[in-house]
Length: 439
Ligand SMILES: Nc1ncnc2c1ncn2[C@@H]1O[C@H](COP(=O)(O)OP(=O)(O)O)[C@@H](O)[C@H]1O
Ligand SMILES: O=c1ccn([C@@H]2O[C@H](COP(=O)(O)O)[C@@H](O)[C@H]2O)c(=O)[nH]1
Image (cartoon, rainbow, N blue to C red; front, side, top):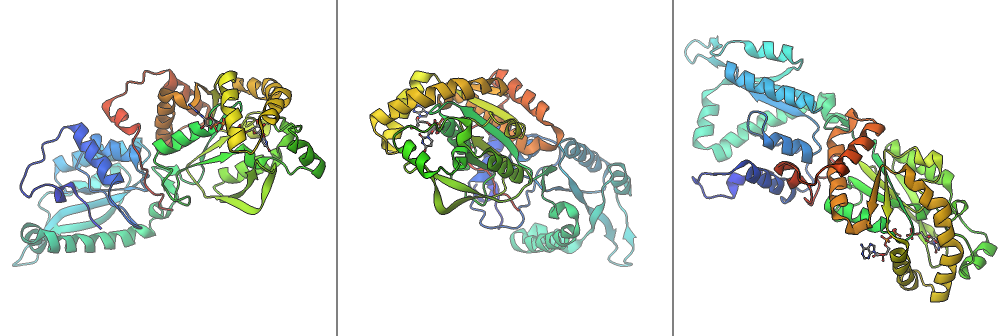
């Protein structure tokens, strides 16, 4: 498949765009083209180190970059600058393709180096290899000029397939690394807060803004898991008490914290996991039903006591606390429990006064101090959510360079920063749709 903005404009008409429009066009090409189930996505970029390259790096999981240059000094200079930029941003360079390396004399077949041999010096300097060298060839030039839409494409495809074959021997294309990041170790975000504070809604908004809701569960870059899946099995007498609203579901003992720790540890190891599904109406885990969580880049784990257990708490790379006032939470919980969880009003209020409120004060509220970022008003706090989404996008491109403390610091800096960002940053926030993970 091939797609270009050139296909969408009238033949011969110029494209007169400012940088921001180029970036919008790129967004459309990345997210609004039906790419089907492709093995490789090759993006042909302009030379240099401009907004186009940065937009791509910030928005796509990139296995690696192929540099293409002619051997002229000016072209090599631009290529060198590009190579340095990719290295700085941790994008692996697969290698370099040299075009017009030589000219073959049609009468005596002598191979003439018209532009010198500085390409070899460049690849040595930046420590990469030359993947292919193509002579300036009459038939290629002719194909490009005359029948570029079919024959040149044919030449290009031959070249690409040969190079891809070579590259597939190359460990960069086979690696799980994206933008130089180990793709299978997710960034784990804990989301705590009182009952009905809006934890699930905040996670949902984050997923929506990252375009993850519509994505098939196997392909999601960001997934969300609820701590409620880890309520422990109750004994028959505990179930009887629960049915009368007399069981304390807000106490840490109600959870299987060992299973939480083991599951999150497996997730961090890049494994696929299966988690139980909780049935609030029957206060029990659904029999013979589990939810499969496929490896993702970012995992959100939300629940009232996700920061309570020290062994679990230390697994998070970033901790968010949704801080919504108690009256609002109670006003939300009452209809939710009656409509969605099959309770009656008395039961909800008794449970709230006897267990939910005291347990919140004793076990949940004190964990706010562990949070890196506190989100007042939950999902209504669009600024905080946009900043978190922006931070997650940065994580997707910058993971290897940061440890957990630096990330937390970056997150809090981000939330203290002015929401006014550079146009390119502003363009990133709120963009729907994220590319499929190629592994
Ligand atoms: N900002 C909000 N405005 C109005 N209703 C909300 C808001 N956030 C959450 N809710 C509603 O409150 C209830 C509890 O929200 P939820 O996100 O499930 O909280 P939690 O996951 O913290 O228990 C849900 O019915 C949800 O639709
Ligand atoms: O069987 C159950 C299990 C849990 N609860 C209540 O649920 C909340 C936690 O879920 P949130 O979505 O964070 O509100 C907790 O306060 C428990 O009291 C329940 O009532 N019955």
